Length: 497
Image: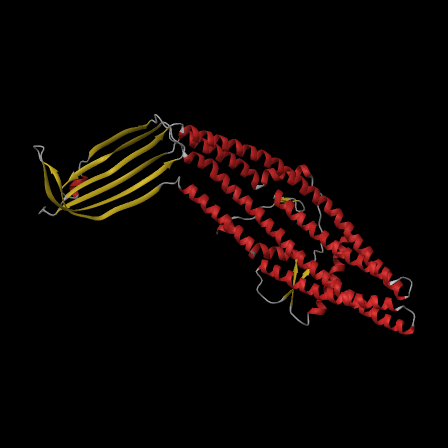
């Protein structure tokens, strides 16, 4: 652990060196990995998409809850004007035409509620109607009132969508909340990728600039030695070639830094033109993760677990719908209320009469040439397909979690090895450079030492990137922070408020 902290401090030293070189040209903004991830979670496009996707699920769930609440409605017709000629049956049975001219008004206030368990509906309503005939000289017209009407409508032997909605929609909302956690961890993974892409590019630029300075010094010394006849011309040419290569690599590294910086700023939606200088993670808190514990946490917390259950329920729902659709159906309707007609508005509410209505309607398919049976078989086949798919995905799910744990635990050792190798390679290059300066080794040996030093530095940055990617991937899979030893549970209420 101390070695890793030492390497982080060493990289910070080189970053400080780089900042001294560039601070005179442009204003710098320093960003740590933690700050980068926080910015990404606040304002990156991926984070905004995740928030709006969760909000969509939230309002869908609110709509599901609202459909079972009582609904109060007011409807009115103000007015209906009718002026026409229509047929009329006389008392002796003959038909004649009469001229009709009237104005009608109506209003209704209704309170209704769905009964989710049975799929029926119950309602209470009050209705008032008035007809004004043009030939009526009194001007009162005719009034009809239904002060109170209570009714119940119940489908029988039919598909009940509300019963299945009560089972599926809460699962969908819980799944959306868990998916939001995973998407935010994926934002952290993406931010880490952009962060280390720029950090690696800046590290490569630092290496190129240091190598350029070293080869410039060595070339100047070599020219003096060549003039004194202590080295051969081919060695001088080799150093000149190395110097030219270093200049080219420095230019390419600067371009790569600009490209990586543009991608990071675009992802973080940073619009300023200031240069970004990244600070590598200096504190490396590591945890030993148990695969069995991680797998249990993933099964309990991951959205896929609820998704498996939801998909199986939806497949069963489709089978139930197919079994009831186009089969024997019945509908029972009951209604009781009060009614009164009168020629004036005050009288229409005096001594109302009872009103009852009962109806039972039936639908019996006799011959459909196997259409209903075909729908049932298709739904049952799809249910088995979903079941098989879920079983296979459960196996892949467990394997994914197990591999993520193995990769994280292994990467800790790989990071230590990479840090140690970087330290050894850097010291080896310093020794090789000193020995070359006194003529103990050839330029070929110095080139080898320099290549190994550069490769070890980049390997360390790559190992550091893989460690953090594996860490956030493990958090995404388990919804658990193994360092803080707590579940990852953001306040979803802040999103909807």
